[in-house]
Image 1 (tube, one colour):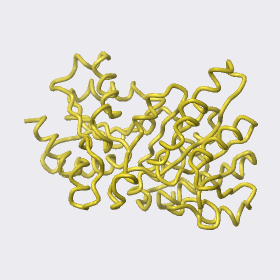
Image 2 (cartoon, one colour; image 1 turned 90 degrees about the vertical axis):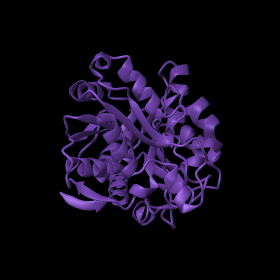
Image 3 (cartoon, helix red, strand yellow; image 1 turned 30 degrees about the vertical axis):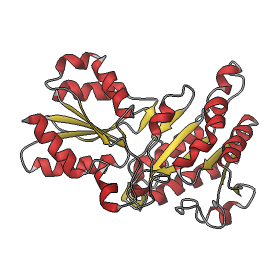
Image 4 (tube, rainbow, N blue to C red; image 1 turned 120 degrees about the vertical axis):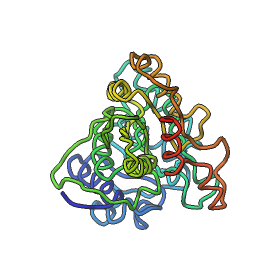
Length: 325
């Protein structure tokens, strides 16, 4: 095992797939000479050349549209959108083209593309550069939606996403980029649609995604000192979704908190809560499901307000203690 950053693991996963399959190429704003806004693609231009690491105009619609077109002709584009907020500029290409083409052509055409972008608050980037929009894309049939939380997961999942024959929305939280973790030196894949039990416990289940995973794990450590055993589950991908692992945990603990950093109204946690309620796990619940999510407000620029609108470690600890009485 090597201990590397999230960025390095992501870059290594892309690099390995580019070596494995010459159809894989990178495109986006400043992904070449500059190495990407967050340096994810640093060094890949020198290694693979301008044909396979392509700087694009400042047009998200053009980036997504070109990715769709190249995927239809047999390529496997990995397209970077500089901030996930700007995916809204390319919604027609993503929602009405990438997500629909395979269905509308009866499976004769496919769109094997990855659209990856940094998301989330915590960097002082204000309202137009700090959103978490994964829930928007989970609503669209034909798209797969992934949000890795660790270096191990991000490498295994980017490789799986690149090999998938469907469009994959790949969301990377900005605060995770410089976190470190163990990553195998040999090749491995993390399959889409398989949740991971990050920590086992008997008293309560926390279902957390993206940046909320390390926060939930930190909260679990604090609660352990008080004799509370928390199970932390990371769905890793929202579409496809591993309902079975969630249900097994809920049946075991009887209590559930869903921790997400997007806005609470119609957030992805609402769908997870519904899946639990509609399953056999409902009869095992000893308390109502609790959702910890961002406030329904644009992300403020002020750092204190920015922190206040998204759940933090102390909020998770408080919610667990309240639920357990």
